[in-house]
Length: 445
Ligand code: BGC
Image 1: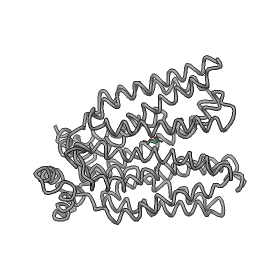
Image 2: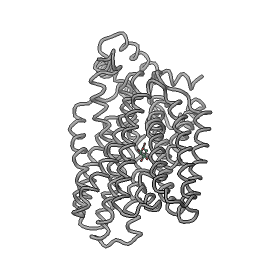
Image 3: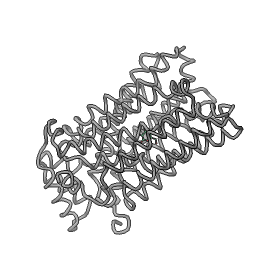
Image 4: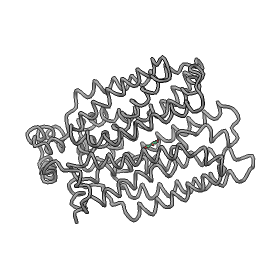
């Protein structure tokens, strides 16, 4: 199998089990927009309380991202995944059964925490379990499942909206969480982490399952051993050979968010309504189209990411995102009767380019560029930056729209895309086809 697909059935299986964390990430961040309307009615929520319900998840994610790196380095990648799966299960039950606003908040913070940890632990786990030639595609299964989770949330909201049943919407999240809890019994700890703990025999056993008893296995094994001498301290993060990758990882994480993807993912119906889609149903249908394109183009990214490489995808993606945002921004100035179709076209193309580039590449790059021993903590810092920017963008978008108007706001995001393009072009190295050890050697040089 490896000869044709460059990965074994085993690598695919463990990656899919881990990537269920991505599905839960996507589903739980998006389901609230569908549930909120009915929830607010049932619990008589004020506007501020509604905002708290939405943002509590992001606060939980910030904390999760911050401590997740430490948990992954200290207790292992698999243990981190087990922790998140159990929390996803608990959080979904709490939300579905919440008798009042307070319990609802507890559920949201727990889910947010799980999302924060999972968003770094899933790519980290898969990167350390895959072969260099298929790492891009396998790690990006995480992004594929995030987009499927988002689409699932749109679909579930649409389905239960008629019955106004917000509890059933949340209950849906129990299913993938339970599946992951079971699946995690069957996957091993990563060889890199085992070696960092001095457990060489256990690591070799996993490597044999990953690559079979071939010479390639020995090569990979040697590289892993050479590059994972011991567990390292926080102050390692300040060493010159780590400072640069740290900056690159924070940079791509920030760019992934400040180029505005979640203005679309979280607020698409509002954007479509301000572009002239008069009924909620029309706006929701347009949103479903955006979600479907997001999934479809992520498939294309999975196919290309190990062939073309990360840099070409990110560079062309950022150019496409900037161009489509410029069209979108301009369409809002024109005031003609075609604003609606231009908005849909602009958003669909923008999301397509994001799905092809920054969506998968940002999570992939941060799972590849850090030295073993502090990889979890360094990823945690980049992930924290990602969630912080996500929070700032989602908090300011509606205010920007109201203060400056849609046209100006999308032009602002166009400029940010161009800045992002400059950063990627100048700073981000190509990691395609390199082992994690090769990448570490590159930074040391
Ligand atoms: C981002 C999320 C975003 C999603 C959209 C992920 O890579 O981290 O913030 O909502 O992609 O597909």
